[in-house]
Length: 195
Image (cartoon, rainbow, N blue to C red; front, side):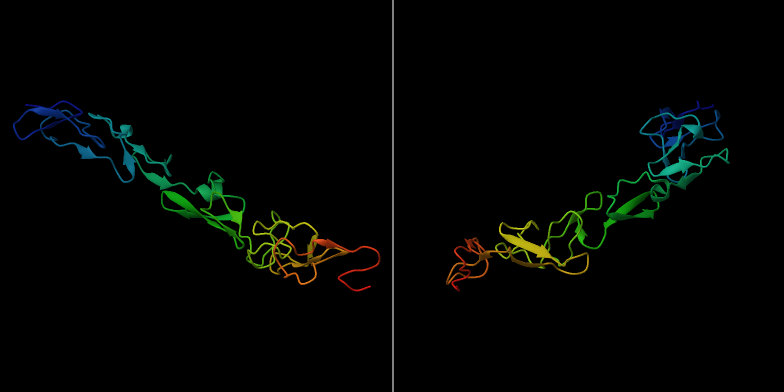
C-alpha cells in the first residue's frame, strides 16, 4: 500500500506521524521514512510535517532567499547591530550566535560592563581611581572622591593622586587613611600643628 504524507511506516506496518524535526513530502510506498530537516533547521516540535518548507532555520540563522530548498545561513548579529553587547564591549560573531567581551577597564558578562574600581584606570563613570580599593585615602572603594579630598591626574591608563583639600590635614598623631584623614580644618593661622 501507500503511505500518507506526514506519516512514516512503523515496524508493525502501520503509519505514525513523522516526529519533530522531520517531514515526509511524498505519498507512496517508495518513500516510507520521514526525512530529517536539513542543517540547522527545525519544525519547532511540530509532528507530521508534510513539506520541507515546514522546517525553519534556528535562531541565529536565516533562510537563503536565493534557494528553493532550506539552506540556513549564519546571521552576523554584530554586523547587523542586533547583538545585546554593552557599548563598552566588543561583539564577536560565531556560527549561529555571538558573544560579547567587556573592554579594558571594564568587567561583566558583556551585555553589562561595569568599570573595575581600583585597577588604576579612571573610566568616565568613575570620579576617581587610585589603583586600590581602600577607603580613607581620598578615593573610596566605589571610586568616589571622599569628603575633604581632591583627586586628579588619572585617566584610562594612569591612577589618580588624592590629597587633602586646602586647609585640611590629618589630626595630630592620626594615621593616613581611614575616616579621620583630612578631617581637621586649619584655624587661626595654624595648620597641621604648625603656626
